[in-house]
Length: 53
Image (cartoon, rainbow, N blue to C red; front, side, top):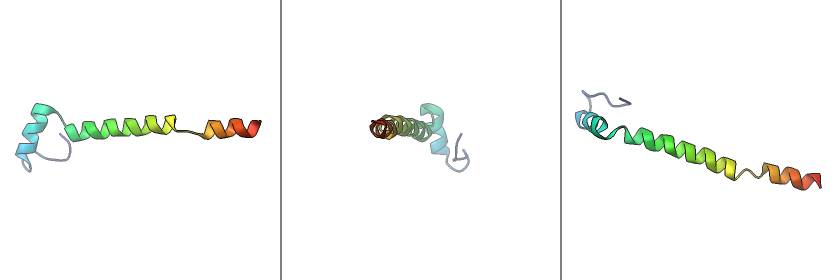
């Protein structure tokens, strides 16, 4: 389990057991999307090609 100990948050622990650690999964997917967006919006190669002309 992640940040919540079952003795501190038994309802959360039960939900994690049933549904998985949704916040951790959302965080992982968001980081992946940010990396993909960074690659997609990398204009460095465009600038390099323009200066080479």
